[in-house]
Length: 411
Ligand SMILES: [Zn+2]
Image 1: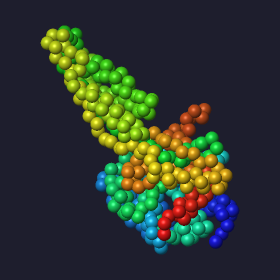
Image 2: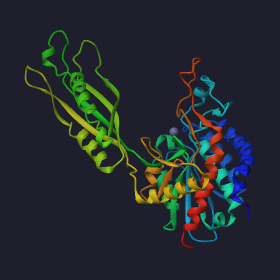
Image 3: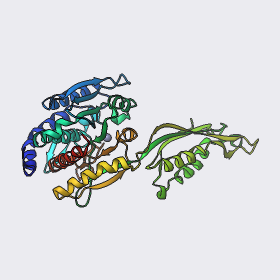
Image 4: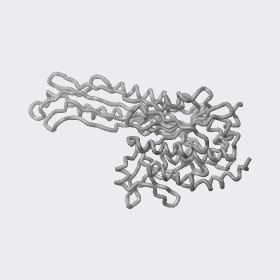
């Protein structure tokens, strides 16, 4: 067996190969709605992990316009299954990459490019991690069954990926690791141990139209009613509960000479705990009913209807996640780096999988500016990038933590 002090130099030697693979993935556009590109990134991924003994399965998306999910499996000699999760898609249409000349572009320690950080860089940290684990801890690597999942449509909140994973993960599954990017702590990386859940809502106001100059009092102005409700929605924001509510879209009316008879708004709300989430949900739904804008002619009132459109449950901090995090924290101590924990406002596949298995997220590299493709000459706008220097330390941390975790499993 090789000595663990050789781990970092060994990973450093593998880094050019990993970055070359990453470059090929980044140069392949895999916008969720480009299923051919998503499939090709799946091919590159399958090829990369084949050398580690993984067998591939493609799982069609329930939406026929999206590419297939990718599942790679390697059977272990002992008990216990570990699941790792990443995704194939990005948010960038090919035209946008073209327009903003947004492509693979190393600059100092940063590598700019679509998906470098979200999440193709995470896939390469996973690859480096498993390559090194096999090299340095072959017994631990070979003992467990590995199931690696790539969502084809994570950026569109794919409705079927959770099922695809859950159907392939039995009761011997010890945990799920998500390779989204890490957070940057003051003295080391931060892993993600909780995420906000998210609900989306639509508010519809129905009023009554009238001639704006001749008989406005016969109308009930739906836009005025909607405006009054906006303040009440904003007031549902609650810092003490870490509950956030956002009105993101608004529309209404049909012409300037009419009292508008309809108006609507859409938005979202998010919270870390089920209680805070439910509080926000109830407060939004309570807005339904008769409004306070009415026609003085006959008392006709605007009607307000609030609907919840989609929901993703919160991933609250929990003992399963904390148990996993403890292995990474201890691995950090072995390596002399401080590993922190972070609760994040954005969703990931962890939100879906944490209900089934202990889940830890943020195992990918560091970087910033996810979902941004623009660059301005004065540098006030910069696109997505990954920190090249984060791959090796993160893979080393993952290797040491995985070794600790696998050794702690009853055999
Ligand atoms: Zn994303």
